[in-house]
Length: 341
Image 1 (cartoon, rainbow, N blue to C red):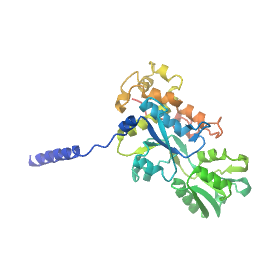
Image 2 (image 1 turned 30 degrees about the vertical axis):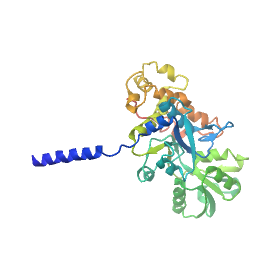
Image 3 (image 1 turned 135 degrees about the vertical axis):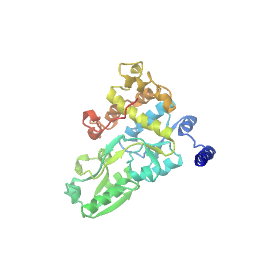
Image 4 (image 1 turned 60 degrees about the vertical axis):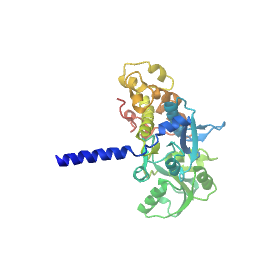
C-alpha cells in the first residue's frame, strides 16, 4: 500500500511539474498568425525549384509548398520562399527562419536523430551519380582515378563520394562549391573534370549546357537518396499536417483524384477512402486541426503526384525523367501512401 501510494504521489508530482513547463509554440498557429508559409527551397535547380520569366518560383519541390499552404491557409500563393544552400538549410529550419524545408534533402539517420529533424516522407527516390565530358574518354566512374570532382558542401554527396573512391581504391581531387549554379559554372569553366550530385540534379544541370550532347551521365548510381520534406522535431501536429499533405497527393493519383475533379469528387462517391480523404465522410481534417476540405485544396493547388511529376520532371519536360522507382507500387515503382482511415 505504501509503495502504491508513493508511486501515485510521484506520478502526480511529475504531472504537475510537466504541466508547469512552458508550452512549445505550435507551428500551425504561427503559420496562421503570419498568414504565410515560410518554405525553404533550393537556390535554383531546374525542375525542382527555379524562377520563371516573371520571377515566380515553380518546380516539383515548390509545388509541395503550394499544396501545404493551400491545405493550411486556403491559398497556394500564401508562401514565402526562402532560397537555401546545402550548408545553411539546416540552421534555417532549426532557428525557425522557415517552417518546412522542401529542398531535395536526403533522409538519413544522423539528420533525423542527431540534428533533431523529422522527415515527413519521401517525395522522390533518387541516387547519386556523375556527369563528365565525353572528351575525357571515360565511360565509367571507376575510371576516374585522379580526376577533379565538383561537389556541393554540406551534403551527403561528400561522404558518398569518399566512400565510393575508397571502396574502389582510387583517388580524386575535391573541388568544393556551395550551390548548384556554382557547380555548373565551375564545371563549365573546366575547374573540375566531373560533377557529382543526385541523378535528378545531374539531369537538371545537363539541360542548362549549351551543348548537352558533349556531356554524359555515367552509369553508376552509388547511393540511395530518399529525398523529401522535413520539419523540426517536437511539434507532432505540424509534422502530421506536412506528412499527410504529401500522402494526400500520392494517394490522389492512386484514387484518380486530379486538380480538375477534386472538388466534384468531394461531393461523395462509392469509394469510402475517397470520401474520407475529401471530407464527405469522417473527421480526418479535424484530427489535424484543419477543416474537412484541406486535402481538396492541397490537390487543387497543382494536382496529384503524377500531375506534379509530369509537369516539372517527366518525359515531356526538358529533364525527361521517367517515373522509375517513383511510380506507384501498382505500376512497378515503390511509391505509395498509408491508408486514409
